[in-house]
Image 1 (cartoon, protein in one colour):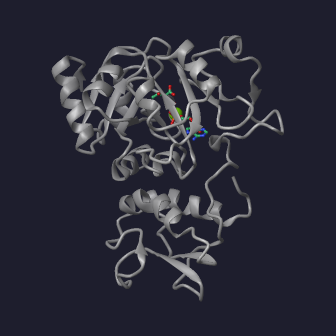
Image 2: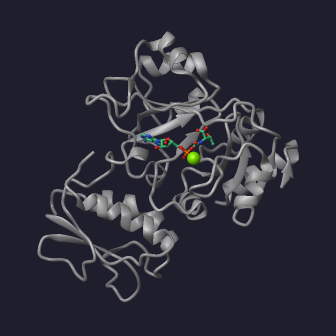
Amino acid sequence: MLEATPENIALAAAFLNEGKLVAFPTETVYGLGADARNDQAVAAIYDAKGRPTFNPLIIHFANLEAAAEAVIFDDRAKKLAAAFWPGALTLVLKRREACPVSLLASAGLDTLAVRVPRHPVAHDLLEQSKIPIAAPSANRSGRISPTIAEHVLGDLGDVVAAILDGGPCSVGIESTVVDLSGDRATLLRPGGISTEELESVIGPLAISGTDDTAPKSPGMMSRHYAPAIPIRINARNANTGEALLAFGPGVKNRYVNLSRSGDLKEAAANLFAMLHMLDQPGFNGIAVMPVPEVGLGIAINDRLRRATSTEKA
Ligand code: TXA
Ligand code: MG
């Protein structure tokens, strides 16, 4: 636990650049941060939170210009950013082709949730580290979001390199999440910025789940990345025309392998990038070898099972 002095913020920025986890204050809640470009560091977030599934994460940037390198801002997004950033608003936008953020951080989706926080410690950490920071709320799955550093220490103290203590969070509830990736602006999660405030800038919002034309939040299930070709799980080998996604030792080197050593964190880090790589019209399917149903393997299998179902994004 570190007081948020300039020296300690610089130290925390160095930890992030080394791929370590750092908890830090934002004006909404404390975040569990990692270098958003680093698949392994992002996998460590999911490992630490102990979520049984890979929910896409919010990516934090120092300013609008930095965020615009990762996602495409349309007029609505520019208006909302001008009105509420830095602040408690998260925008879901289309990823750029050259987006540097790990595919695991957005659970393989072609969209990305981005936010520029107002808290000076979060801002300084983003400026000093010079990286986009992926950060869910800094609590283990199923616990409430932390609004003071002591909450984080009790819940995740053993898995973070540092906790920057910036005092209590002024907003105290999570950011509002608005999906602008489709034609209709849609509220995915109510939060620190009210619907009325948002509507005063861009007009009426659709509410996720209440309207058939509104996309659903991945948090509410149903909108997931799934390859265009079928996935077959618990496969021992590939059938004719299938690509094999291997796991563990004893498999020929020419196969793409989630982790040759059988390391689940490495497998999680590789999962979406490898699925995207094998999702090609030249194959008639992807056969995935069994992944043990423990630790991060639970979330990996959850995603693979969803990708085998007929439900598509
Ligand atoms: O205030 C906050 O938003 C805090 C601080 C740390 O920034 N973060 C936070 O993150 O609450 P998390 O991971 O607990 O919640 C992220 C929310 C989830 O509801 C998730 O489904 C949604 O954002 N989300 C993230 N990426 C998305 C995407 N590409 N499409 C739709 N929803 C997305
Ligand atoms: Mg949360």
